Amino acid sequence: MKLNDLTADAGAKKARKRIGRGPASGQGKTAGKGHKGQKARAGRGMRPGFEGGQMPLQRRVPKRGFVNVFAKQTVYVNLASLERAFDDGDTVDIAALQDKGLIKKNFDAVKVLGNGAVTKKLTVSVNAFSETAKQKIEAAGGKAEVI
Image (cartoon, rainbow, N blue to C red; front, side):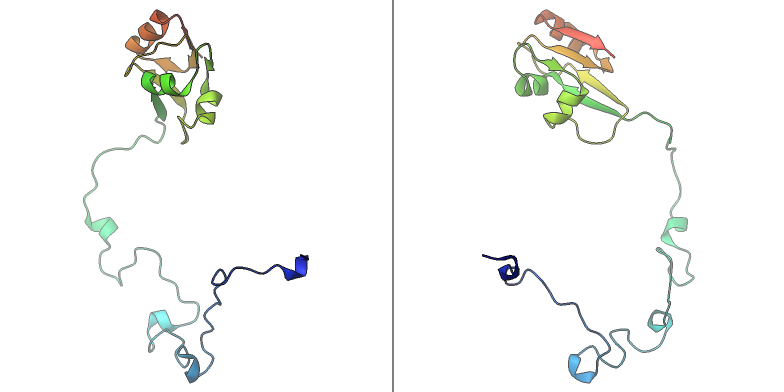
């Protein structure tokens, strides 16, 4: 086998639609843009959400509530997940939690919650613990360290 023998599987590459290349192509004459109007013109542009001058939905719907853009995003992990994912004597930190896939999204802090039981001796180093989580970890002989 040579590099020039390599080809894509059948159906893996789809040819682009060639518009405006005569009536036989099926996309000739108006090239799929219909007849006249704003959307048929070159350089047309309507911003997303534009409804032809009608009051757009974004402005018609009443605004409620408040979103604090400075709020800290906290990710929560339960003891049951730690029990399932880690072995006896392991050190559980943020990097280890990410490696095991227990936390994925962007966050500012990690908090361990007390849902589930822990029987393994774990050293857990995260930003926060619930009271029950801390008690259960320490009762199993582990350590709960706040970073």
